[in-house]
Length: 383
Ligand SMILES: *Cc1c(COP(=O)(O)O)cnc(C)c1O
Image (cartoon, rainbow, N blue to C red; front, top):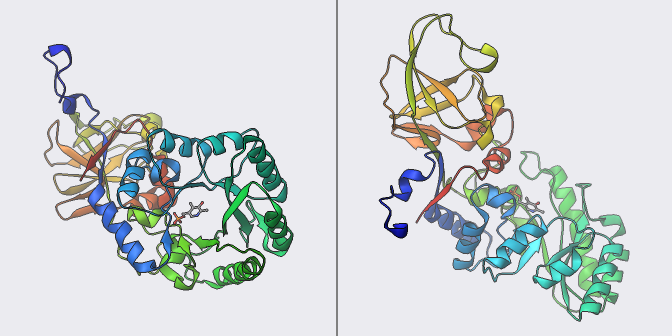
């Protein structure tokens, strides 16, 4: 702890917001190693987009570097630049599209680009030539997602064009599954078959050995034949399963606890509704506590009158509409004091709230819960 200028300062622990995301790096490390073990000899590209699914991009990238991950995947250029500026040396693939004048910036930071059309590929080739650099590129094939990439049925032209480039190193070819977290894998199998046709052709026309990859968490869990040369785990790395119906063939654990504290205690009487819109009221005196978290942190408003929190090992309901910065919790006749710990996600005693459960309250998927916990919530890492 720094005591700047010898002021009688309060400790840093006291000035950091009590609403925090605690991330256990040991759990993340175990998840990573389990995935690696499960897919070997395939390589692993942990996916760190959207602030590492809320876990904090830079620290998680550092951990992946310590663990010798083969590659890092992010969604947008800015995420890649931040990692380069903070000293990440691993190869980084930016999964999203490229537009405008971004190509020279990709090249300057040694970021691997996704080429999703012949036009983009030729543009990369031309700019790399001018800069006298070899551009590292993965080609994106659309096998059934209809988002970005060249359709599998047009892939031959794309690959032929790629062979002809002069300043581009075609390092890999990839595609993405649309339904791999489902119980019914027929569409996923169809996508894999389409991709295998592309692989067959690529192996015929490229002299170098390329990295072929298509598997996200759902496929890693359910379709080992899709591992190919590399896999791209996102949500499972963070210990959350991509759906309820997915087969849990790798046992991963959530690394995250979202917690806060009690900052206010009061009794609420009948005929005194709680919160904006007065959506909840009691018919008898209750005890309640106020917690400094709200939708402005990513504690979603759609969970109003549905969410629960854990205080002193017991679950209690959130009452009234969730505000931007505060929620109110009904503890009925129980006792709680200012400063008591409140678990929003995580466990305490025998009580547990998972990301999946929170997603159900909010009417969304676990991915959205994680990526919505925004930067106003300090991340605290434990080893
Ligand atoms: C987000 C993403 C992944 C990871 O998906 P999960 O379901 O979180 O494992 C993999 N590949 C691409 C292209 C992605 O955009």
